[in-house]
Image 1 (cartoon, rainbow, N blue to C red):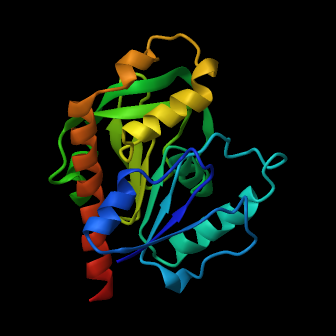
Image 2 (cartoon, rainbow, N blue to C red):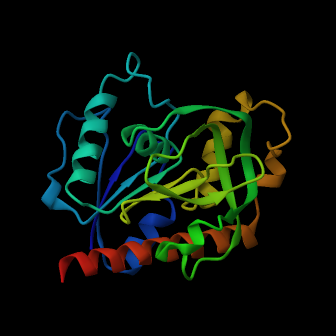
Length: 236
């Protein structure tokens, strides 16, 4: 499988996605639209992954390249490519698919559970995934569900934690790809700007969570295995 990743910041590294690609012998390439004017060719990848980043989906003035990235993602969706959006990536997908992105009532930063939605359990995508998982969050925004999408996950803080659209486009507001180094880099870069709140953990609560790190890695691998199967079924 050929995986292509869109990155928005050096802080938002690939985490366990890189480990997955290496252990499964998949090709992994990336594009940073904020550094290049070139878009990858649609026939150069099987799976598109859109990472997180410290920007908003409407921040065109500060990030003029954002319109080009959105157009590319739209083309990938229209071409029938499997697409996974994580955090900012999920918000970009929601926006491209016609839904609103806005500030959530609370910031959500740290390890908090997400639960599978009853409606989403009818989707093949959730089969084999745990009904509840404690995963890492780092966001202040949320989104409405696009028309014709299926709601997948919710948390106590944020109702819309994920959806699937057209059977191939998956948005996850949380971060299933993190490892310890990734969390440390987020805290180091943005920790001073964290406001207190009911869903904002302290540094000591975020770091050293071996059980959660192991579970979230397994969750990420299960998600990517589903995309691998999806790609295989498309290509046969």
